[in-house]
Length: 251
Image 1 (cartoon, rainbow, N blue to C red):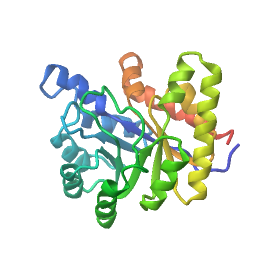
Image 2: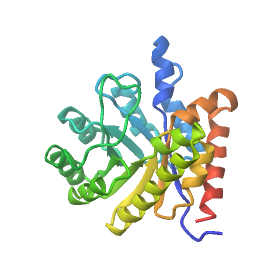
Image 3: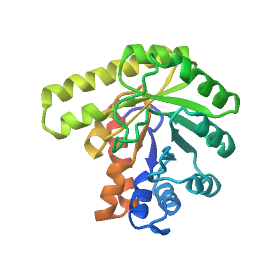
Image 4: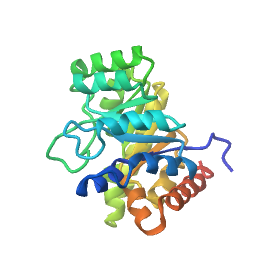
């Protein structure tokens, strides 16, 4: 058994709001989903307020902050509008992500190395307000070095390429992508950064990445909301928690 602290699970409830917005009205309520996820063992809740408000809305963020007992992680683009909303909402954490209106979901990591001048004011203002800042980046040494230079205390490694390769049965590609994630996590930890990971994770990939001792938190959303259709959100979260614990025991 590993003597490492339990790996934290952040549940992203964006796509509960996607289902609600497909028809309009208030059902299903992402706040209710957040409460159910916490009851089932989630250590925190993640929500992405996009500039086009395609799923989570401003009032969702305010209601989440008021309603949940666990930390709220506000995913956001590093724009003046989003920084002001974050400073008003005062979540536990803000994860800065790239955002393009035409994308279905976040594609790739933030270019922290190429956008240091644009990111620095957002990172500084959020940090000054006592909000933990993380940068959602690829498993790339340049991006990790940039995150450290920006004094963001946390990075979240984009796991999408690895998850896609694993799901498609491309074993060699998946192994290479996992090695990149492993090496990036080690580099980031040596640089003094807290390491999170997320994007595309399912029960199997969450169990595998849980064995990396440098990773202390996973953020998972779309898969859990999809599984909730068949099993319910509580059972899906509990199964994910068990898979993560099983992987952590091998760390």
